[in-house]
Length: 49
Image 1 (cartoon, rainbow, N blue to C red):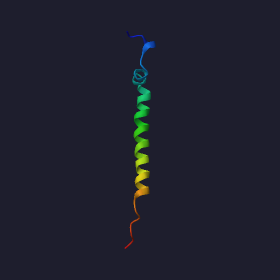
Image 2 (image 1 turned 90 degrees about the vertical axis):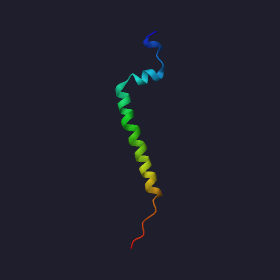
Image 3 (image 1 turned 120 degrees about the vertical axis):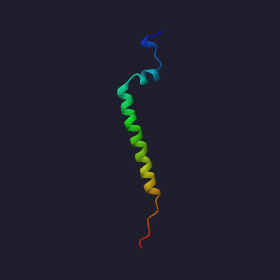
Image 4 (image 1 turned 90 degrees about the horizontal axis):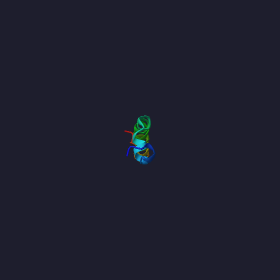
């Protein structure tokens, strides 16, 4: 039942704490960076007084 050769691929991913740590840092970093760049491209220039 607990044979490591028969583990589901998702279970193998969840058993690796270092991979989860790296994904937990990289995914939010990339998503917020992309979101920020999109927001910067959509902002209209402010008129000067």
